[in-house]
Length: 330
Image (cartoon, rainbow, N blue to C red; front, side):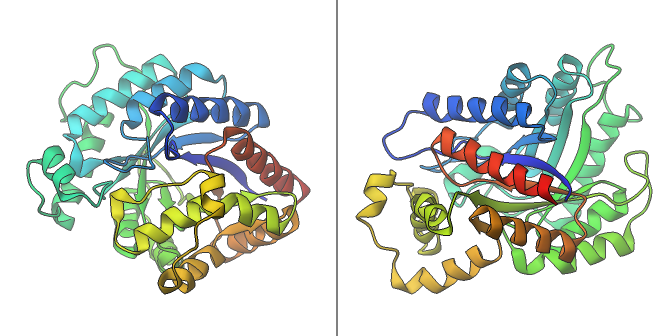
């Protein structure tokens, strides 16, 4: 099929400590390193009850030290929340510590639905304009390139590989204009994927960062021995997503599997949740193989990044192992 990578959110079950969630991520990273996955990225979120990935450069540094060959990075560092120079300094330092293994995925979102968190991060809750975001990306690239930007790290001879994250055609157009590889959030807005990729490839300009377009498609993937087992494993995350669809945002919790057995998915969001899940890859190895193959054929993806929405690290790693076996069979 294509190369496989992993997106981590440091899933937190109700009643779990942050240390447990972060150790689970470390365990998964070590496992996928041995399985031959290409990279692992850490998302940036703020204020969620069920997500522990609040500081990508810190967690990515830890994961780089815990693995041997896996590329590590951010999926992404949300640029409106941080000064571009600070992001460049953090990831250039990480690249100096782990040469040839560091990616800097850049995103536009806030990473939260909590206006208080947005104000605390940015000093305002006003959304960033497209022009301001593009300018921030250009500034960051200037720092990484060592041109007119400020000195990032004395003696640095290694920089992280920059990527642009997008879930819309407009975001993909910025990646095309600047000649960056693109990671498309199919797991966020699957209805935008084809239009975004078409625009990216049509408008791509070669740059110092990439001579040809390169696309990672991120897809939620949960693989178990049977379709029924996969749905059972997915039930806690389905309930958390249902809470988000009901407008609970950062307060939507992820119940334990035992608690999830006693809860029902609200009927008013059931159809929306089912429609979203149908665009992803949930099920037995046969089902997942078919879904991933179809996604690659539809998108022309150069790489798939799998987000596995289950807390238990053993189940998460087993799902990724089965998905990797599906790819090998192709």
